Image (cartoon, rainbow, N blue to C red; front, side, top):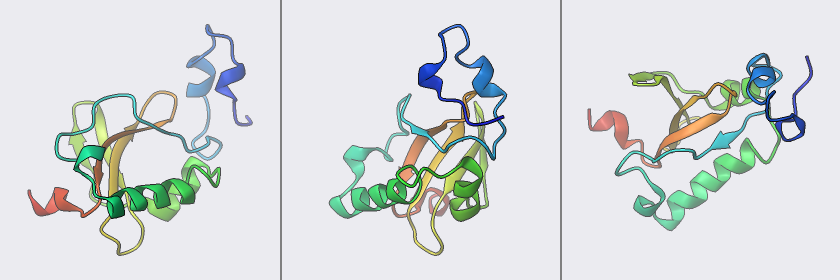
Length: 124
């Protein structure tokens, strides 16, 4: 099945068609649909941290990469569990910048935590 453009789907089909997408066919979409974790929000970031987040957007969303391409380039090991399931994190090579979240039913990556200095695992 080819990629589905959700904007063109009737409301009663939203979600049903999208759930049937294969991971390799799905476009990587990053969404902020709920509160970010305290201490890991935009208000906690410095200018350089925001630039790192923007770099991540440029290398993923702006390049129109698929979900599988983003996972191959950026997915890091060491996922943790949380109430909605698996919390995934992305980062590039040996840089400290990490972005944590999970995939919703529409295969969108829901951002839960932006960790520009990879403090998450250091504090646990």
